[in-house]
Image (cartoon, rainbow, N blue to C red; front, side, top):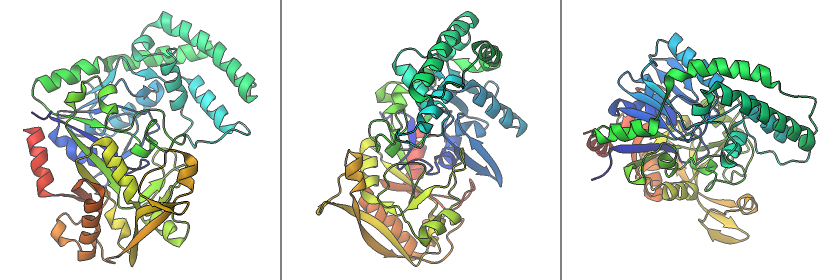
Length: 440
């Protein structure tokens, strides 16, 4: 019997609109669990015109009957978390006894931000384009077995010793490697701030792995919420221009404490085009006025950083690769309405590298940079699709665009987003039936 779970993740380089999709689907689930990343993620949800931007907290918390869990695979900045909780309370979103943080999650401390910022700014070093929020260095400490977990944050003596030792080490590293030794961290001040924060975090801390397994054992359904996107995955993305965690479906089990057999349906979210923030290869990037038009119409600016996103044409080989890596059964297409004004729409259907035709994603950056996309051109529809919630009411050319994407990607289209609001969402009948099976 298939597990009563679904993983919702990004098929591209993040910013695909996962937040809205998780919000739309979460009314059918007892709990939504984040399994990777940190407050570098930005999931935007618009409900009745009101905008919510969530970074650490799972989008399911916006549904009154749904619990939100932050899994062990997430790195937690306590100050950022408490700030987000405070914002939700001011917006009258109930979080107490509905929001939980894994006691095994790793903690981000100020020296992680210092290390990351110094590395990004150091002369001669390759820039990755990080958000400089300390995510990468926190994962580095986790793998080096020198990190601080949430359970440790709640032990004052251990916290104090850890901060004193870590500050001495990190201050020395920054001075030796990056030449920015004039900026040093005060361990006493840091301890006072984070010991106080720990007491505010304490009511949210739980063994979320056990909670999830108990929810599943009771026959209830769980959604796993991914962060970033498949092409930013530490193993399967465009390395080294990637994030530091497992953004693919496999990360859901490791990052929450459920077994791999608990992973049921995988739902992959893709924009109707492609965007990327920061550095790194982007084969189908548009460098002309059309790219600017997509950015303007799609409001393509980072929800967390505000940085403008690079825009490009839909990349079928990349989408097919992503669906294969994740075992995606269903595809959700967002921002279809952003393409409404275009007379022609190009879709990358293959690559040419050094004169050879291929649809394989090169593992190395040099290979990715040598790609020359091979495009198929489809006729645009030049009609508004905004707010349409029935497939048959879409313009014929828009229907064909979606059918082509479905045929070529290896996954069935289950939902289409035709605007930013929760209600501007099309749910196809076959997908609705599949969701009923999970929920039932």
